[in-house]
Image (cartoon, rainbow, N blue to C red; front, side, top):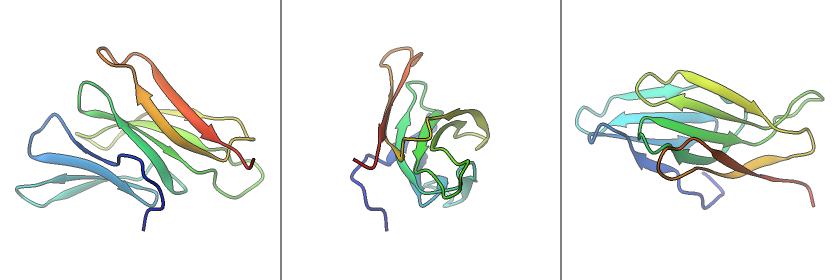
Amino acid sequence: GIRNYSNNLYFTDDPDEVVWYTAALGVVMNLKTRKQRFFFGHNDNIKSMHMHPCDWIVATGQTKSTGPTEVPYVCIWETRTCKRLQRLDHPFAVRAIVALAFSPGDGDTLVTVGSDNG
């Protein structure tokens, strides 16, 4: 299971749909039909999620994957299509993106918090 306490469940702009993450997968589910769509943009466990004020764009932050060139990153993606809009790489010394938030109102700013080995 998930070993963090971040909010990872949001309603989207469609009142019948919710979005959450598990492992490295973003999930959008229609509560009436029980059909799911998936976002496959991460290569390691997602540790944080935040919904944009428009309620159909979400940001998810992950743990750094193993490998000498891997870095942790944030994906900004659409819940309607599960398509990635942007990938934001973080410095190599950062271990994971443990929190993130869009600014209230217009959502023009995204703030992220990284963890390290210390």
